[in-house]
Image (tube, rainbow, N blue to C red; front, side):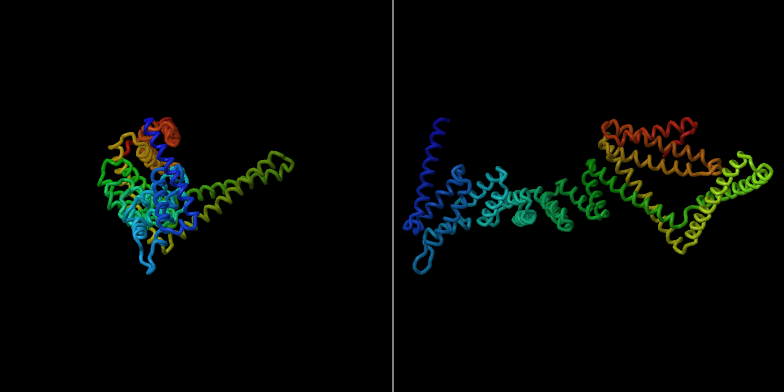
Length: 470
């Protein structure tokens, strides 16, 4: 090792002497006019770039310019290139020599030193010498990205791909750049080209789905995910993502269904309930008017009675409140009637029926996707939590319908309805319990489970008999 070190030091000293001599020669007017002087300089600095970068971290650029000077000087009187000129031209064209390797080597050194601008410049020079290169275009694109030169990165990665580069990460990275600029078609095309070289690459396939989602093309995202789950049935991520995607679509459908039902004036039960509330307020109004008449008569006999005056004020306030509610309910009932008689009602009802059918079909797909994910990975938090949420939300809707019942409706169907939503709450419970066990730190699951247990406890106190949900 000592001998090797000594030899290296001796060689470096010699190269330093050659460098100093070259620097001196080009300052001499006669020497600088000779092509041979520049050829020696080109080879000296190229050697430094390849082996002794510590002497000059940009030596390859000096070598490059020196080769160009040789081409310029080594011509005869007729303008024909001489031997040195032809040799230099071949080196600059990459058909001979190691100038390309020197550019890549010193570019890599600047890259490692985090000087991305300098590294990029050297990688680009390497590409001028070897136009079919993939190594310099690969690292040139990475350096450009790191230097936040997006357009240059696109150009570098595009050259890499055009030259036959196959690294999947390049296709992925270029697609990410396009995606950030909302150039979704170009991003998809890039990923699909990457899959031609790497047909089994999961990252490229998943990113295609993500870009379809980002661009609002949910139908294509579903199709791609369906294809992926068929190709790899054990891929839990794809199964969960497919379930989430179906879930998101159904959430939007649920909003549309609610809006359309409101547009058609709500259900017959709502109108019936509103009628009963109006009748109740009218009954109260009659009672309050009678009471006001009675108290007013007594006050004529006892005009100084503070208690009668207080009673009159209270009853008058109650009567006015009843009038307010009557006006409110009559307005709401008129609005509901107008909506129910709207010429768009039939169309809206058809749309509701169509959306509901799609909702029901997609719900089966949601449950199937999550169940398949759990079959492959029983402790998958997302699948467990999302399944629990589906049943929990379904139970909440059922419970709210019961909560909004009047006494007559409750006496008729309330108890049965309570048993049904109690059963759905119970069906949700084990999914949340397993989700909490899988990820104890996730507050969302534990908080929902607490709420669910509280509801079940209240139902138990009311002695509600839960009906097992299918």
